Length: 284
Image (cartoon, rainbow, N blue to C red; front, side, top):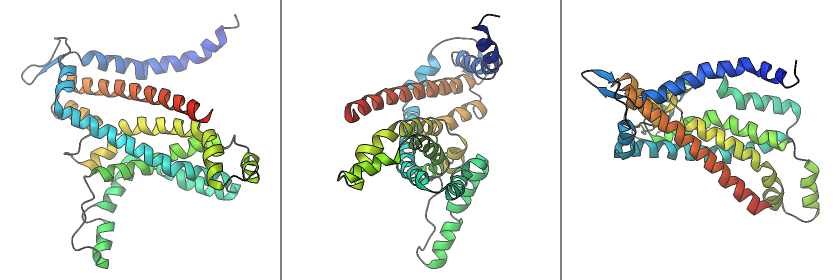
C-alpha cells in the first residue's frame, strides 16, 4: 500500500458522513432557493433570482438582518469583556478551585437550550421571579417589561456563549509563561501596562478565536430569540423558520437561510483578516 493512502482511507468515513449529513442538504437548500412559490400551486420549478431579490430589496428583511447582526456584535463584545478576565483569573487558580469553577462555567452547556431559555423566561417574565421580588420589596409599582426585548435575548445568549470565550482564551493563557509578567513588573511596569503590553498581545489569538465562535453561534441562534424575542422581535433564523412552516414558502425560506450562511462566512472571514492586520500593526 502506498504511503499516501492511509490518511485518505482513515479520513474517508468522516468525509462521507460530512457530505451526506451536511453538504447534500446545503446543496438541496441552495437549489430550492431558486424555485418559485404560489399559494395556489405551491412550489413550482420556475428557476430565478426572485427570492434573493425580494430579500435584498425589502426593508422588512433589512431590519431583520440588521437586528440579527447587532445582537451578534453585542453578544460577542460582552462575551469578550466577561470571558477574557474570567479566563485569566481561572488560569491563576489552584487545580482544585479551577475544576470547580470550570464546572460552574460549563454548566449552561450541560442544559438543553429549550430548558435554559424557559428558565430565563421564568426569571424575567411579567410574573417572573425578578418582577415578583421587586414588587414584594416595593422597588417598583408595576412589572418591568423584560420579556420580548433585545436585551433579554442578549443576556440569555451571553449566559450560554461565555464558556466558548473562556475556553478559547484559557487555552491561549496556558502557553503564557507567568515569569514574563513578573519580569515586566520587576522592570517597573504597572499591572495595567503589563496586562496591556504583555498579556493582551499574547492572548489576542484566543480572543479572536472565541469571538468568531460566539459571533457565528449568535447569528444563527434560533431557540433563544424565538422564545425570549416573541413573534414581533424576529431574527434571521426565526424568519426562515416562519417561511418554512407558517407560510410554507420554502424557496423564500431557503433563500433567507442561504443569505445568512453566506453573510456569516463573509463577516467572519473579513473580521479575521481585519483583526490579524490590526494585531500585526499594533503589537509587532
